[in-house]
Length: 290
Image (cartoon, rainbow, N blue to C red; front, side):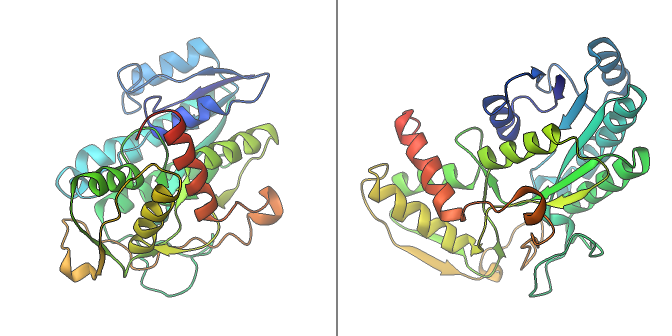
């Protein structure tokens, strides 16, 4: 089975390449090899390669920059998703699209269910929502997977940023009133492959690691585990602060935890986020990426 993975240089695409099951032939161009917003090139590539499945792991994910570059974010997150899904459908390929918890506003103090009406509060979330809508309009058989707070040993993400800051600063301040669920891209990639292997179609699913955390909780866990396994040497103070104390260009949801109750019967439960964080940090140490 031939699978086209977009966003080949991104952390999720790299984990998808790392976890590819036997019997799959993978093509994973980076943005230089395939700009998903370039309709002519997308259609040409899919027509030539004739993939059985297209997994869209490409996205504009710079949440703050999206406030200034909303047109660029829209071209990638919405137009690109539409172009890919249309081209995949016309080629007879199944389409799997990765979305985000940020399609929800996060004002409620309850988990966000799959059928809840999205209400994004920033440009990034809005472009991802419009991407979902474009995909569903183009291909009713597409699978949309929303996830949250993704990190891995690849690319730039919260975990790697915190590790660098913990080695270069005397203290840190981290927001404590934004609640979500960290997700290891390695585990997410494995579930996307499971969706492909099972031939799932026409579904919207939520997937994250189990448990919840604030960014402050996440940072504390990174330091605690990092010191336990010898990835970090010195402990520094981490101060909890409120969102109002750390203004950003884009508003963030206060509570963006995805409800997983409809996913568990289909894909099973993910490990707790602390267990996956430990596994990722141990791998990071083993491979000398500290």
